[in-house]
Length: 152
Image 1: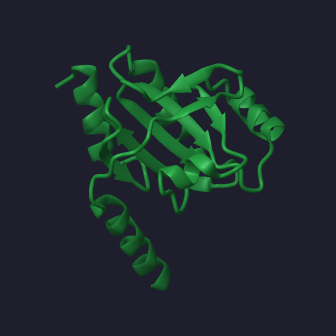
Image 2: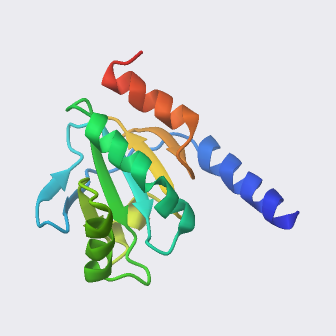
């Protein structure tokens, strides 16, 4: 029962937080490509290979990446805690995930976006203003992404 209450409270707090403005994210991916949120609607997913919810949601992240069609960009941010670049890359390769992935070994990006747990989904507009945040891939997040894709 305590787990259910804690999880419910975590979900409520993660979706009710006031919209924030974030500085531009500029980082190198594991493939050594530079990604930036400057001037682009960006969907960020903070995750770890040891996080069961994160792993379960990865096919949804890949689907979002494939459907973005230049309407928004997807960037996966591995939080780096108890992780290695090599291990993360092996995980991505094993599942043939194509989305750009940043390894946040220093925790700087995780702190910049005030992420307290994984998974964490953050959708920001082209000016760095938070549009949506949730702990899990929700129907509401899917609706936001579908709207950006022009599906609605």
